[in-house]
Amino acid sequence: MRVKVAQVMASDVPVVEESTPFKIVARVLISADMGAVPVVDSDHRVIGVVTDADLLLKEEFKDQYAHEGYQPPLRARLRHLFGRPGRGRREKSRGDTAAELMTSPPVTIGPETAVVFALRLMDRHGVTHLPVVGKDGTLEGMVGRHDLLRVFTRPDADIAREITTGTFGRSLFRDLAMVTVTVDQGVVTLTGRLHWRSDALTCTRLARGVNGVVDVIDHLEWEEDDTRTWRHR
Image (cartoon, rainbow, N blue to C red; front, side, top):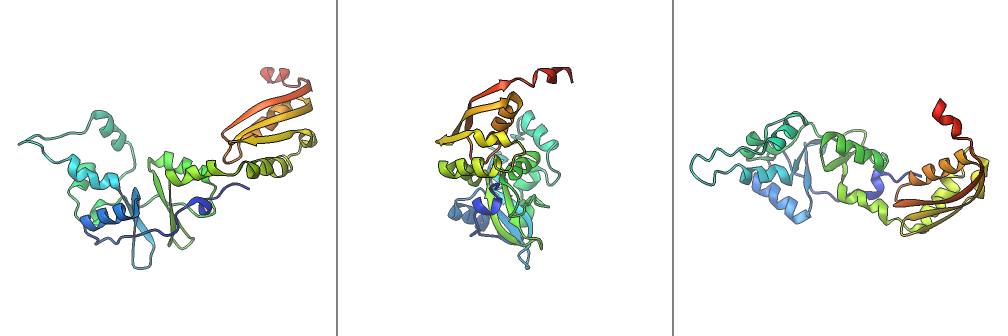
């Protein structure tokens, strides 16, 4: 029941080729109101990504006065030094085509991947957009951080249904059927009485892991605390 990348991605995505000039790439990004554009080969396979940040390097590294010799702040230089390998920022600032601007090889993701893994992949590689590709590497869409926010627009009824019949329904803990789930603006409230405290904690953890949940309010009661021995394990 996890929300998948295919459910939130943009499918009508403009593309550029390696030979596409700088200004055309800029116009594509502006017209599409996107922060990144895939670079594809003749078979529509993704070979790189150009972002708005890549284009803006050309302005960032321009000398504002004679012999300025601009250097980015140390923190920015360290971040890029230990980031993904590829062309240096100053080298990219001299680029005139998509091939000279793009990051390659691109970080891509499949359409059936859960959105949580898309976020983790972005964080791991320091990117904000991921081309979505099929098994043959051809482009199927594009997903950015803005798109992933859509998980928080899920209707409350859908979230409640997934927790009750999906998450709790598949649980090995039979007592979870005694839990009442209500959702308001993405905030889940759990009420009911369980035998074991560990079951109550499991309930809260499972509910918090559902896509679109903003917070979980735990009003569960329990009869016996079986967690006191956890500290000694």
